[in-house]
Image 1 (cartoon, rainbow, N blue to C red):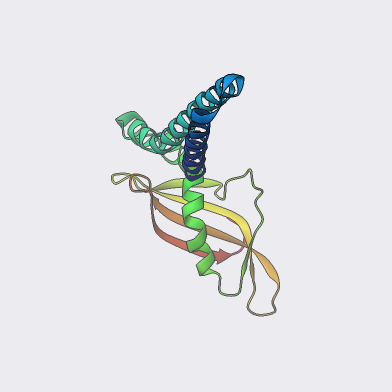
Image 2: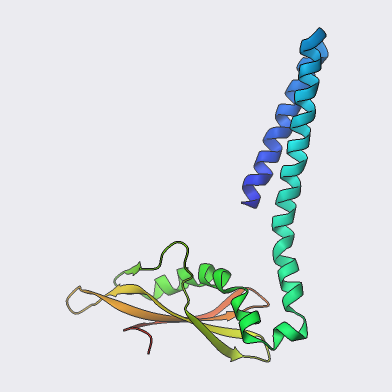
Length: 170
């Protein structure tokens, strides 16, 4: 999203330049119209850049809020705030664990993980759990429900380790 907004801002800036050059040679009402269009495009370009900047700084603001001691000791606040990010970053590592193939059974609006627990509270590491996947059984090629876990460092936004097993979560 941030990249899209940045490219949109660049495109609008180029369009502004073209209109400005054309407006220099235009006469009468056309010139006023082109200058108005130029102003609108400059405004849109600036707002697109600002929106992109907000997207970039949103994650750092989120981490700053989480680093306070109240959230750091509350598992729901600490792990629940970044559960979607953890799901996004852990997914490729979980998929690599599947020997014969994996199919995800979650919907687009759902998170990959259903629960979480402290892995190392002192360092802020969390273990996320889920079973919204099916893996191919090596014995007869059937698809079976699989459960998985991901050890995640919330402060560093880093995957520490993953596991994938046959069967639903206990």
